[in-house]
Image (tube, rainbow, N blue to C red; front, side, top):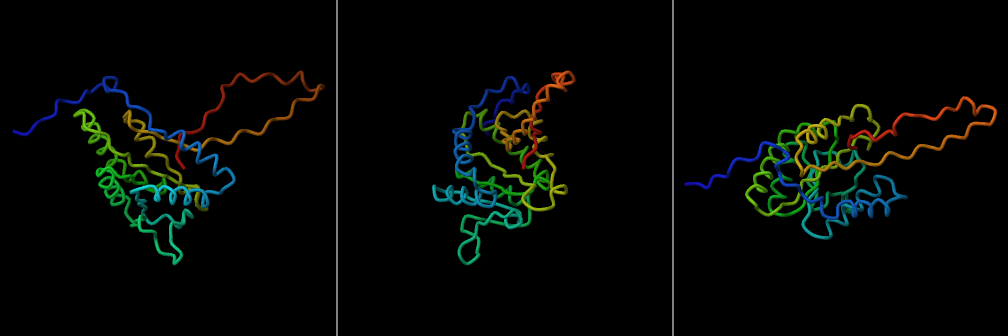
Length: 214
């Protein structure tokens, strides 16, 4: 007889809380500080190349690295050995999922406009990972998506945060969404003394960044 797992708790509150990603915020802050004076095409390839030098790592992309100006080629213009491109979001996810199931790390780079194609695949993987946690099996590396929309000039047509919304709606504790910070607003000049009578203090709450990925 096969060993059947007991039913998963239906109430999200009954699921055990997960630890935050190990060192992810600190590492991201360190990379961001080091890349302060770098543009996106300069910073991202350098970070990925450095990560590939540290151990098993793969980048999967549905043929969108060049259009996002992410240069991961050698001196001859050929893709680096750890870079895989194929024009299929579903295959990229399947390969990345299989790769992470072996305990290795993977990154998927693509436009957020096309990323929702993989929403069902990712949700199925979340269920699989929930079963692993419920069975008290060891953790596996996460699949990390780098979603872009401002990497080239078609900004309006390549903005669609539907994948982010769908994953956050699952309430799964293993989902983490990191977004670029909103640049601080420029300070407004103080009103002149003769106009100070009309400068009423604002009572509106502070604005928060919109949770869309770039």
